[in-house]
Image (cartoon, rainbow, N blue to C red; front, side, top):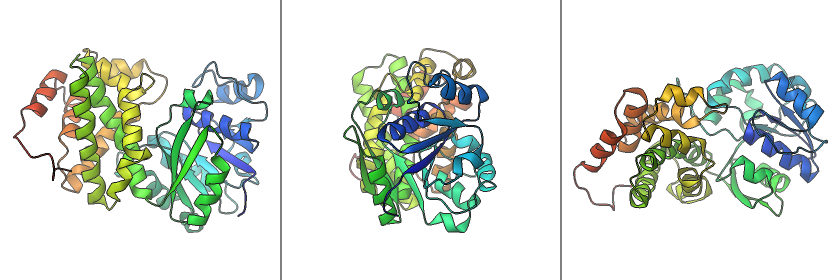
Length: 339
């Protein structure tokens, strides 16, 4: 495959819409699948996604559809950008629409809660064997609104098929959208998923008003937990010091546009989780991923105290301040050797 001309994006949330806009403006023939009929109609009629990316003008060349078979027709690549908790049913529906194998990129940052599977593992379960060699992952520090505004962004694209990664790297790149190639599919996904959990914890720190020192410590020790789990699962530790690790972690733990950080701030200020989630249109992946991350920590026997405490806050009614106190009161340990 020398170059890409037609591409499909599955999932019209903020990130999926931003990616579709980016590709269409680059000149690729781009179709965007949306579950919501009103989103399809608004994109095609008004060239806007008022539900998930309001106020952003979309190019008239971008076509939305509610049909996966329409999306995949003559398609040369697929970007998968649906929330992790509905990934499996959407993939099952997609399989019924596929007539030939298509290269597949996951841009979903999460872990399947019941199975503790990463997104490419879910895809391996569902997609035809002929497509499993062509699975890739796109991740890194990237707020959808900033990508939509054309602000400089850098991400990584990971896959085991080096030639295919290079082809899609070229298809995605523009002067404002830089893409680095990577081969660590596992590590890139772990970083992209767990940074959302750490963002919840960083938001709690900020909601409690504990200061910049505490937030910096939380981010640093959160990275240590991510590396420990990643290594236990077979990832390259160097991946976590790149865009999909520390890059995305810093952005999501500090940026005002982070949904997960916002949830954490509101928890720290005393709001109930049910109230917070009920007021949000978009998905905060970190809430579901927190439970899955704790499950992975137990499965691989990895010490992840921040993940443990944020789970206690989210699902066991533990107070945010008590969780922070318990983290600070842990036995003294050397820093080196703890990663």
